[in-house]
Image 1 (tube, one colour):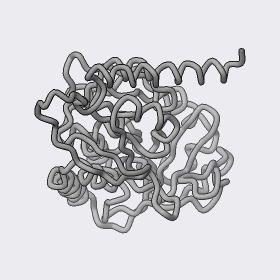
Image 2: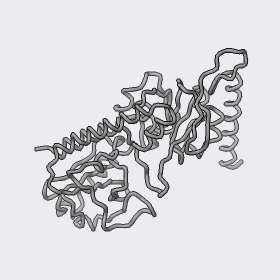
Image 3: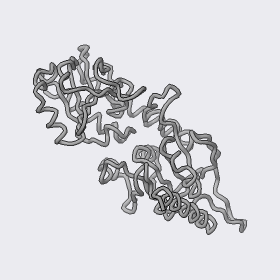
Length: 325
C-alpha cells in the first residue's frame, strides 16, 4: 500500500471517530435531543465558508501558534494548538498565559487529528491556507473557521488584520480594537525615543542556505519596524526575488556592501547562521556595520508570529537597540 493511501485511510479513520464522538455528545455543540438547554450559536461567514459556532466557545483548538496568541489577546484560552515545525516548544511569552494542561497537537501542516478529536473541542480556528488542507477532517471534529492570510492582491494582511477578523467572528471587536490601540501606543512610545533624523533600516534574515533581504510589505518584526515614523524601512534594490509577490529577495554575500541603509536588523535562524554572516569578508565594509548600527533579534518566534504578545517583545528589543547609548 502506498504512503498516500495509508495517510488517506488514517484521515478517514479520524473523521469516522470524530463523528462517533459527536454522536456521543462530544466534539462541538451539544447535539442532545432531551429538551435541555442548547448552547447559543453564531453564524459566521469566514474565509472558507459559513459556519455555525458557539457564541461562547470553551474548548478552542488553534491550528497555528500565531492564532494561539490572538486568542489569548482576545480573552480566550485555547486547550491546544499545533506547534510550528521549527520550534521544539512554545515561547515563554505565550506559554506564560496558558494552563498546565494545555497541549500541542502536531504541526500546522501535519496536525494530530486523533489528538484534536480526543480533546472534544467546540471550535477550531486557523488561517485559511493552513486550515484548507484538512478542512473536512476538522469540520468532522468541531465547527471550524478560518481568517484570511492574504489580501486580494496576494499581500500578507498582517496580524492587525487577522485579529480584527477574528474579533468579528467571535463577537470580540472591542478586544481586537484594544489590541491594535495598545500596539499603536507601544510603537509610538518606541518612535518617541528614536531621533527623527531621516535614517533608514534594512531587515535581513540569516538562514543556513541563504541570506534574505525583506521588503516593506513583509510582516517580519510583527510589523513594529514597519510602523515606525522616525526610521524608514527600505526595500531591497538588488538580489533575486524568491517568487512573484514574495516578501523578500535572496541576496549574495558578495553584494553585502550594496546594503546602504543607516541601520541593519538581523533575524538569524541560529547563532551559527549569525556568525556565518558576520564572518563574511565584506561584512566589515557594510556602512551600518562600520557605524556600529546593527541590531540582532533575540526572540525568534516573536519576529515571525505577529500579534500583540509578540509585538510587545519585538518593541522591547527594537527600543533597546535603537536607543542604546
